[in-house]
Image 1 (cartoon, rainbow, N blue to C red):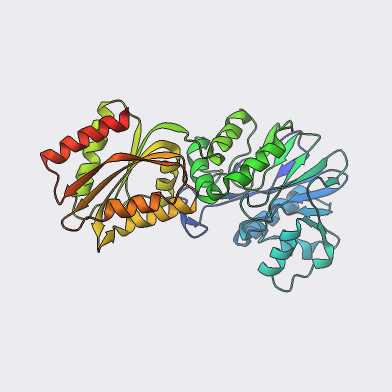
Image 2 (cartoon, helix red, strand yellow):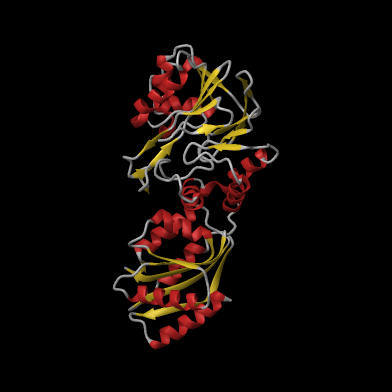
Length: 390
């Protein structure tokens, strides 16, 4: 990984890339790996900003020791105790017996839970909203950010260089060495919706707290350090966390048993494209669920197509709706397509699930396929495409 420069050079990057991981949090596909970001501030006092996953602690320690030289750290600031950030902390605290750990009250409890027999409990300094840590010419000011996305989270603002250490906020999937030239929005969106999507009100509260700060650099715990066009990233976070659609268009999600429901979904896709509608389509059996959740949140309209299955709803569509609800899906227009050979139930079940979500507007027209797509079905889909497009 090439050297990363932050500010005037007093803040050094000591994070590591994980190219071995295939699933982040054992559920999110990360084909480009993952970055565990960590930083060290070299001033009159030395402060390490978070650690990394224990699997990468040896590589992280080597980078830390190189930056420290003959110096020893005075503090390690823990903004978030999830193991992908705290797995290396206990070893550093053992190596440097005079180093103190700065964290929230919740973080102090969580570290004791994750690392039984914690040997440095007497060296933990708990900080709260508004507290500061003076390092010399650098001063860290702390802001509580509970449930962004754990209750222990703090963010820290370095006053002299106007650096925001944002914890998991403004992070994205992907190792830095693999995604250097990659567009930020796509994988940051998938990361945010799936990791923080449920906690929009808490993210909104944090954005309001930070709105009065002049920020020149954002240093997240995952993904690239952000230094340019910061308004773009902040505006996207405001959009995502307020559950507003980001893009005018349609997301079509379908589950199909024998190809007939898929045929209907693809026919609708074709008709909407002919009308110039921006859209994405996902076969729930063959796509990444996290990307499907991202797509549903991105667009202002969504079409759900699924067959009746065992007196209820196709399990893949049922799981998709469960995940939408758990992430706080709301404020969208939704159209339904069902398929059945006897005793249709899919649309009824989908409607019942959607009615448990806030501000969902259901299209009155439901296309109901009887086993195979017919000319009558296509006429109904034509009418549905017209209604969706308008």
